[in-house]
Structure formats: C-alpha cells, structure tokens
Image (cartoon, rainbow, N blue to C red; front, side, top):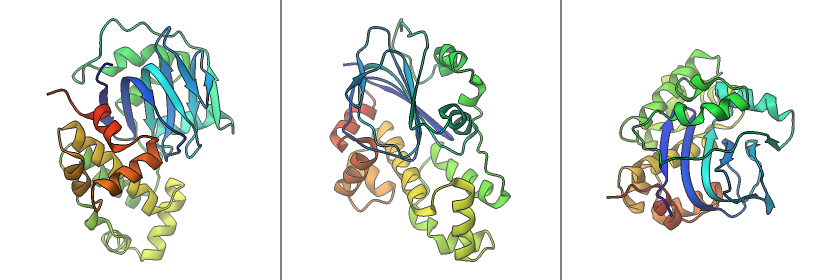
Length: 250
C-alpha cells in the first residue's frame, strides 16, 4: 500500500492514495472520486468505470484500490460549479480518461499538473485548485472565513475562541443575527461547519506528525476517542485508519 499524499488548501482537500475503504458515511464536503486506470473502485457496492461527483451530506460507501479523492466545500467556487453539474442528483458519474500515474505525486509538486485532465473532462477551471475562493458575499462572513483559513497554514486557532457569541461580538452582530446570517451564506449552521473545520485541523496536525491524542486536543476535541467517533461519522474510518492514511512516512 502506498502512503497517501494530502494537499490542504482553502475550500478543498485533495488526496492521492490507495486501499481506501470507508463504511457508509456523509460529510459537509462535496466529493470527486477519480480512480486510476485498472484500479477497482466501488461506490455503495457498485463498480465505478469512470469518475463520480458526490453531493454534500449524501451517505455513501467508498472502496478504491488507488486514485484521487477531492473534498470540496459546497460554497466555494468549485463547489458551486459541481452543484450545477449534479443537476439535483445526489451522485453523478462522468466519462473521463482514467489516468496512468508514473510515480507517486509528492506534496511539493503542483497538483494542477496531475489533475488538469480531470478538470478538462469536467470542463472545470483548473485554477480553482489554487484560487478556490468562497462564493460568500457578506463581507463579515468573508472576514471570518479568511481568519479560519489561517489554520491551514500554521497552528490551529483554538476552537475555544470560536463560540458563536464571541464571534458575533467581533463582527458587531447579535448572536442570533450572526447564526442566521452564517446559515444563509454557507447553507449550514455555524456549529457543524466549525466541527468540519476542526476535523481538518486535526488532519493537518496528523500530517505534521502529531499523535491522535495531540491532534484531538489541538483541534478542541476532549480526547482521541471523541476525535475518532467524529472522524468515523464523517469519513467512515477509524482514527487508526486515519493515522495510517494521513501520517507522513518518517
């Protein structure tokens, strides 16, 4: 089994890996699955012959021998374009040239080089991988998301700083107005969205070599068991599988 490579950017988590085997689960992110040529891939028990788009919050079970998985925030530019392509369907398969990977891509490499054929087949703009901006229009919520994105480039901003009342006060809003505005702009309530971002922070910590316990505390979970339960609910795998999936080879 190859060790997966993970790229985390605002609005999109990109994974190239093998032996992905997740139980039925759902999560906030939309998803693109692009299997390698001659690599067995199953969605909900059915064999996938090409790529597939999965909508946000849709239950699914995925098995893949080797290939790409993109997790995309629904309110990003890329997420909105994928939403249009789904045309109201929970899943949508698409014909694409399955790729032959010459070698395992490294985190230091430009992933647009690898994913350009996929984006061309989907008639997507490859620049989204780097400039995957949010479609949120309210400037206060834009500011909040920009601050949250700091976690992707450094240490996690402690979730204790993100209570709704405190966030609302910083944005000069009442708590009820903030919660209503956030839900309107993102299509999801503040607490589950923050939980999703905390999971990404934990993943980021594990990529950098933290233990499950340290990653859990850093991202505001009570312990590794709490993180493991949350991770299993969102990704369909245990924390042990997650460590094997995300942790760098030393």
